[in-house]
Amino acid sequence: MVMAVLPKRIILMRHGESQGNLDTSAYTTTPDHSIQLTPQGIAQARLAGDNLRRVMAADGCSPNWRAYFYVSPYARTRSTLREVGRSFSKKRVIGVREESRIREQDFGNFQVKERMKVIKETRERFGRFFYRFPEGESAADVFDRVSGFFESLWRDIDMNRLHHDPSNDLNLVIVSHGLTSRIFLMKWFKWTVEQFERLNNLGNCEFRVMQLGSGGEYSLAVHHTEEEMLEWGFSPEMIADQKWRATAARGAWNDQCSWYLDEFFDHLAESDDEAVQNEGETNSLSVCA
Image (cartoon, rainbow, N blue to C red; front, side, top):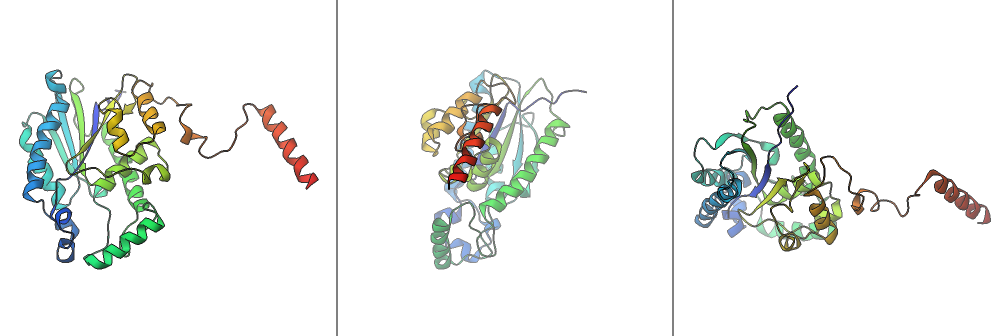
């Protein structure tokens, strides 16, 4: 059986500036999925296309590269991709797929500006991840559908549905939305809800590059700097984990990653004998009580 060749990069990109980013009253009369890019958003997307091409070509050091795009069905993401495409030739793009599971978080139907202001204030008090918008979704709901997309993405890679020539470096580009992109990263790197809630949103047409490290794990630290990750809201521990992943063997376990075990337990015994001893001490305390 032929082993699947992993993409060299998985790139998450937010759409360009939209009418809704410029004036939230646009959502009052226009469905969220129909919100268009502004002229500034179009210019951002064209510039982002140039920047993406340079990343994929490694500034000219990687002549054999290809791109495959997944795009949210919303008008602003489709338009962003269209403008990004101006920077690519046909031979470089091996495919594109509209994927509804990477759409924006559903905030309800038409959004009344004054009402949404109150709702978003409530979300801040309740918690951004678990708060469900009336007639809409929570970030937890988005997590569930992004998880389904994950499964499809891996099947596409494993079964070579992307028709990728293994002699070329493959770049998967996911043109989506700010929250959806952060959820994708949360799912991929197994971040906790607390870690997710400290993350800052991506700017319009900003992108995050998950690049395959020397050992076979994906890391944000291969392409991005520590200063960038701090600006995104990463804790020192999250940054250290990304640096570890840059050279880690595929599937390796990071013993220094606190949220794998230490986040959930006050103390784990180093051995079964110590665990039995701790149990005896607990029973003694219970008797004394």
